[in-house]
Amino acid sequence: MAFLDRLDRAWSLSQSNLCVGLDPDPSKMPSRFSSQPNGIANFCIEIIDATADLVCAFKPQIAYFAAQRAEDQLETICNYIRSSHPDVVLILDAKRGDIGSTAANYAVEAFERFGADAVTVNPYLGTDSVEPFFEAGGGVIGLCRTSNPGGDDLQMLDTGGEPLFVRVAEMIAQRWSKLGDCGLVVGATYPNELSQVRQIVGDLPILVPGVGAQGGSADEVKVNGSRADGHGIIVNSSRAVLYASSGDDFASSARLVADNTRKSCSP
Image (cartoon, rainbow, N blue to C red; front, side, top):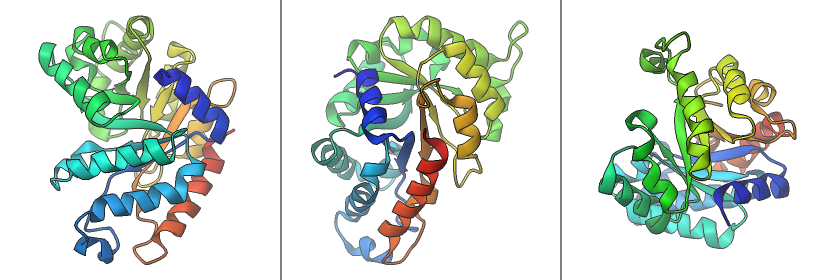
């Protein structure tokens, strides 16, 4: 099943716009996991099981695993999501962007090694740099208006009367959407820009990071980013959910935070 079809199905079954980001930091995880050979995977799987019925998607961030030499544990986690929670969409947050055969290998990494439904990409190199991802049959989610303040350095540059992020949104909506299933990233910290992007891209899905630890409002995201049916947004919360507690109640605490966020951002 193609990415957009799986996403629509996930929204329908869960009635949730929430995505839990899997950004495992051993220094913030309960101490018992540090002594386990597969502690990162075990921690993430407990979070997954505690929240799976509350979400439309999980989004592992590959850098958190690579920094710990734990890509094999990321594979375990991705396999677990697909086998134990097959109705939940799997988004690999890798922000890849390169040309030719390099991009093709990144596509193999995302869709064959990790079995992701979609991968985040950097659009700076243009449309031909993402074509290999479409050719591989996966979903492509382009960075458009990111949640960090430094995004202004490029994303707000004037490009003939419009900021660059608007041109990126137009490119994804008008060109990328003809190549395959795609979406965009717009940070929750910029609700006005989120509303502007929604008007540009129609019903394309928007991945919205920045809720929780970065200060974005789930309620504002819902108002400014949702489609007419109340979906269309994938509202990511990572640290606020993962590290809701450092004690033995970490999973139940994660579920509580996830449920409250789900209620704020979903129909």
